[in-house]
Image 1: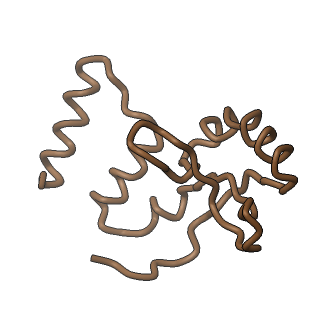
Image 2: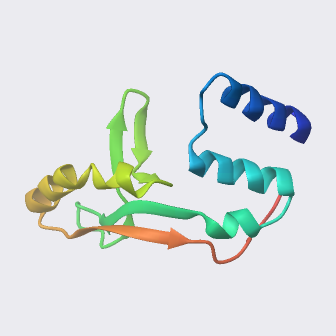
Amino acid sequence: MKTPQQIRELIEDMRANEFEPAPSCLKVLEWVLSGGDEALCELELYAWVGEDELGSGEIGIKQGMVAAGMIPLCAIKKEKMAKLKDRMQLQSDTWGKKISLVRFVFAEVVDET
């Protein structure tokens, strides 16, 4: 595991090589380095949410198939999730179930390590 100083040096090295880390990544790093929840409070999580297609009535985060298997369709960047709208509309039309893009925001720290 890298120390906070090593992480700061890594970020500066990335910038020196004209590679700017994504703002969302910098927020997470700031939170890790600060040891506090202030940066975490600013994070938002976007996810496609809907009812199970098979009739269980459960509502949850939709999943997508990738080479490694199934992954939850959620991200820090709204734009990434918005790109999936056509696919979600097709799934909604196929199964007759509403699927919504929702935004989650920080409420509280439930547990820490």
